[in-house]
Each structure stands twice: as structure tokens, then as C-alpha cells.
Image (cartoon, rainbow, N blue to C red; front, side):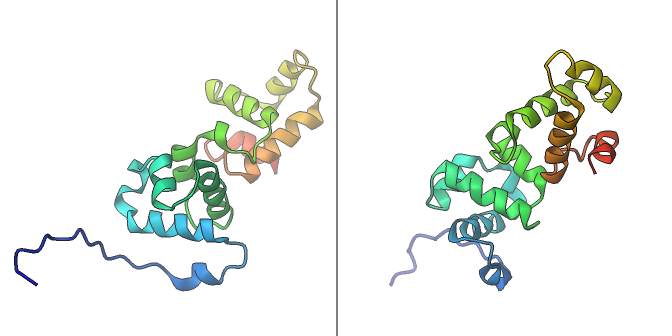
Length: 152
């Protein structure tokens, strides 16, 4: 071999072997974890299509794998939200997605105000509470402390 060999872009990183022994992680989740770990400082700048390409899977498989990693608390929900957005998160019902969209535009809304507005849609208090609980369980109410208190 000559000294004029092309330099290969080599990146050293450490991944805990713990991910290989978690029974709830499939091969797609493990691969996404490895891809994200190899790009720690740049992870939020990666696009979903880049992650899926590097993980050798479809975008849909990458989304599911990231959902699993969030559920297992191996990646922060904030990173997931930045990359996926709530409308591609299939853990959320359309009712929860609509409620989240409304709450983002009306950050100071109370449960009483939501219930008053629910009369316009035919939703009852139980439906609103169910959507709030769904949002709380999937981490979307982190920025809405008042609503998060009501959901639990």
C-alpha cells in the first residue's frame, strides 16, 4: 500500500451494548439508535430520510423505530418531535393531533375553556380528557404544564 491512499472518513463512537439486550427493541430501533449515536452532535440536523437511508429502512420503519426509542426513553422526545412532527406520529389519534394544534395556538387555554369549545365539535369531557391523556403519555404536553396536570 502506498502513502498516497485516500483518507477514509472514520468516526469513532461508543454505543452501550445495553441496547442489544432490551427485549422491546427490534433491529430497526437498534439501527436507528446506532445511527443517531454516531452523529450525536449533529443528530438534530439529520433529516428523517437521511436517518432511514443510513439505517437501511423505509421512512415509516424509521418513524416506528424512533417511537420505540422514545417510549424506552433512549432518545429525548424533543428530538423526535423536531424530526418527525406530531402529524407523522401514529401513536396519536386525530383528536389528540387536533387538540395539540389548537393548544399550540392558544397556549394559555384552560380545561374549562376547552370543554366550552368542545360543544362546537360534539366532543364531551371524557373525549377531551382522553385526548389530553394520550398527549401526556406520548410526551406532547411537556410545554403545557397546566394541561399536563389535568391529564394525569
